[in-house]
Image (cartoon, rainbow, N blue to C red; front, top):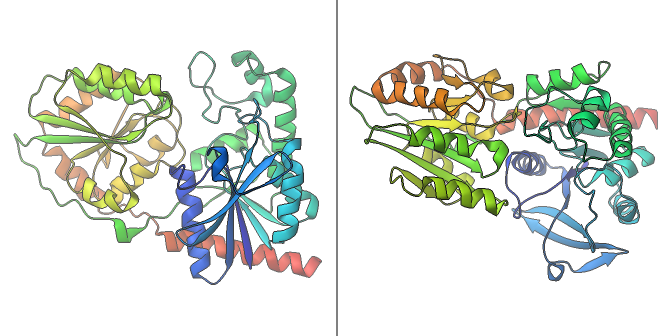
Length: 415
């Protein structure tokens, strides 16, 4: 089969969870003998691209052996992150899909590539949609109101109009209609998280959303074998992007309020909001226990987690299936996470970690101090984590390949 993956952004420019999922599936399908290609949006300078189609710049390249087509508007439209339709992209999308003639399309994320989904639908090409966040429900993807509060759902657009008034009302109506079309025309809709599945089914009651957990590349995983005793010093870890909704400022505030000297916090990652990045670094600069580290590669995660004691996931949004959380559990490292969404789905108090009240640095500080004063608690958590099974990338790919083959066979019978 020829499988085409659509995703809003991709390696090497972007390298967070959704991109990793698409890369993993493309690489696995290629290994299984299928032809694959990734189509994505990018934000490189004009000189990066080697051709154009109308108002769209295009670049084809290989990333880890995977063919990639990166596209960008010559003049980036203001509603690029909100809308599912973009007429300027239509001609390039139709040309590319006509030339590629994929047997099946897998939509990893429809932001910025919604016009490709529209063309795929018009051509009658079957596709699967994986829901890695809430973008098809929420123009902001993270279910945040304009006041920075967590939103309970779009409520058929009523909540969007009320709580995010800067988004044009007509756009809200249009994207809800378009999103329903994308979801109901898909041959399969899946999510790696039961929480996200439930959020979509609550908003769109007649939608069927299956569960396919993301898999782990266990070749890069190393088990943390530390055993703790009273008075042991602890190293806490954060790894991810530096964005407000990731809650790094909550973690730093909580850690600064911890009075113990024999502890440290390692903060790995980067961010595109330079004002936010500068702000969190400024707050942390007078605390020598806090160390900002570089972005780590996937190959480094095992070595890094083998040398820390607790991973913190302080996100202010629901999260779907935070990969660093699952990587931590795979490495036998306990996790402290916010008590909502996909985090609370996986982390159980006193079993494999602890949760704290969303955005409450005081509660997080108390949890940190409990472990600092009683590090032997980690032994109990680590013993429990050994029984926690995370699927492999191979298992995840097997499920998707089975779906691809079933959908393709049905398509052939009906054509």
